Length: 448
Image (cartoon, rainbow, N blue to C red; front, side):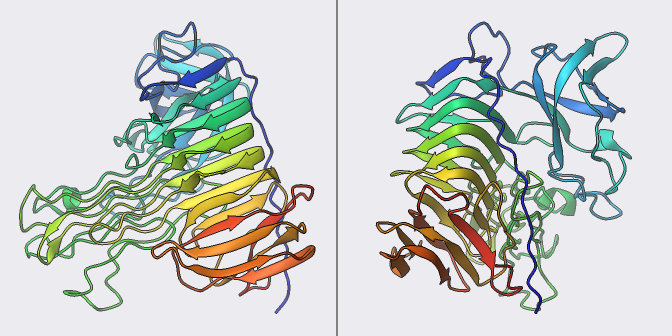
């Protein structure tokens, strides 16, 4: 088998710091709250896009809160999974960022950018057809100078509502210090509603959990993302009945969120599906986590053998010059309360791993890599890198806390093979003098 090598060319862009030094000392939602000094509109004000031009977009509403020079995010949140002729989700999670050069409010609400729109956001992978029927959003990107979430408080955005929200995207010129929680948990694709209509019983998202029947008392599937959500195997054991699907990519080149679980019908309206985790991006010179950065899925519910599906984990994408997780963690887990939601995706790109990196991981769902290294995940996979003499890398079973494997005390290169199933926690302390000190690499295709 030939050995292939794929370079990731992620670029660290921590922003210009124009939104100042921020300390979060109460539970705060940046989609509805003006945080930076001098702002009267939310730091992450968001607007629904109805048309896309060469280097501009048309909005459904007056872009109050945006100004010339602001950085903005253009993203297709979830595609059109409910399209009657079949899913239109090929552009789900696709995004670009721009600086605003001018704004028109008459006769249309139009925002012009400093560069052309290169990607596509419509029905097809290479078109903007029916973009007005997709949840395409334009959202302001705050550029903080420093950002701190105090212990005991949560910085959390609004849930995706089929038009906007569901995504937090921010830059921090210096240090992003997380003593509390930065969260987009249960902010992704909504769960289905307990009716007898297939389009409302289905969750939302490219991997939406779906009902096995609209006229029988059976469970619905859980939402999917990096992995499929759990199906109703008791009533429908045939492998062809997968009531959700996996999607997205390990590198989060598309900033995908988790899909919602399907609803069950037996107790109409009582047992809705769980909501998927949203999407979260932070670029900072230093990311220091004593608390948590999370985008977990929400729980399903049920009665006896009639159960709705839980939501899938969302997407967490971090770019850092130096990253620490200290006593904290990063997570994008599917909910396992009822009908396990699919696992989410976490991708961490760094220049220096300052201490240890703790990711509450599930098999095949997570990437930890330097800014320029390989990453293609299938199972099992290697953890490969450079260790200093006092470094240690451990892999734990998340459910039991039991140590699965460890490697420490040896200078030089190492490779540890993980188990083929998860979930498990990964804790490492590679040498901080080596770029690309920790990388996940694919055993099956020998990409190492």
